[in-house]
Length: 486
Image (cartoon, rainbow, N blue to C red; front, side):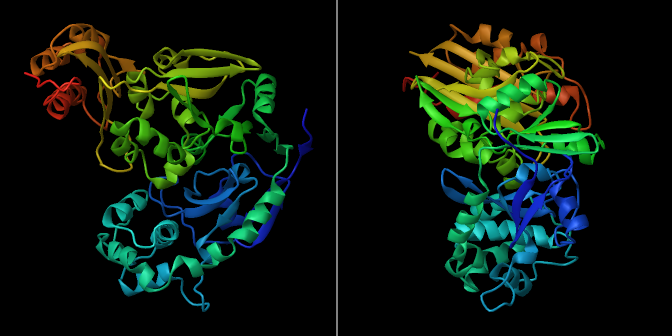
């Protein structure tokens, strides 16, 4: 058993925080505003949607110091052990005046009521450090997670394009102090398990993957938090009390990405942002889809395993992963079991999990040259919105004939689910529009979608059927063999 540390340690701007009484459901935003009186970060939505609470969190990853935007409103304080939190109060210019991002916002009238402005400044700050001269697309992506009701965004976009006119990242204080911050954060890293207890609530940060497996057996009813992008809402919206929480943010063993035996194996603790490069390299059809998963703040926090383990019928990843033939690796103690991803989802809110189980990794078979793949997301907003219908398609064509078909949908049933009737109809048929449209008409056999505030059942069904046509329009000029499709 590892040694136990009973204090939470992280850097907040230029101050070391060492806390011994922290509830597992204390949010970073509440700590900033209520305890430290750093009120620049605002609470707008309390669900990670508006970006008014955006701060930077720096962490060591494979020896490199990485700063990412996160939503402080749903980031739990214990998850920050060993990190560096940077709030807008820390920003400063080289002469002690306004920071280049702030000055650009002033000169280009990027703020009106000002409530959302700190979040925009921090989002643009993170972008500027990585990309001093971003194009419009890069700015749009960086601001996906920030909403403004006043400016119409155009002044903010102009400010984003002009930041480097006021300075360069090389002279920025945060980059200039990078080496010192690497040393600071390195000094906080240890091999201890962190346990924090207050008022009957417990936060546990396992020391290693094996330690997690042991703690999970001891605490099978504990809530597991990786990114907290969904559990955060249990607290902020449903006012749920979290009694015992296992935080996974310190576990490098869950953050591996590797190519093994014809599969891309992604650790459950890998964030959307960390996975994006590898996913885009092996599955190009997912690149645009990936950038539509929430906004950067959520992609920096949310994890691959968390999206799957959460079991939501409208989660973005399960349908497209199921279509690719993904397998899930579950661990209990020292034992592993592997199952097809679609078999993990049993019913609404129910997954194939034994007491003490946790998701360790997901395995994606690498696509073959003869396969055609697509991922579709339909939502009310293009960016940073929950799916109304999500669909993954995998079709393998040989000499103009469909040899294999896997089609999975989210938002159409109580779980992410394969369109087995449509798949069966497609196999052995010519790859043509008629085959696909005939298959689309069988969706009511397998799906009975509900009507809710996002969409009616009829709309969901019609959209899902129309996505078969879209797949043909995108892939039907040539089949996988390069033979013109009829």
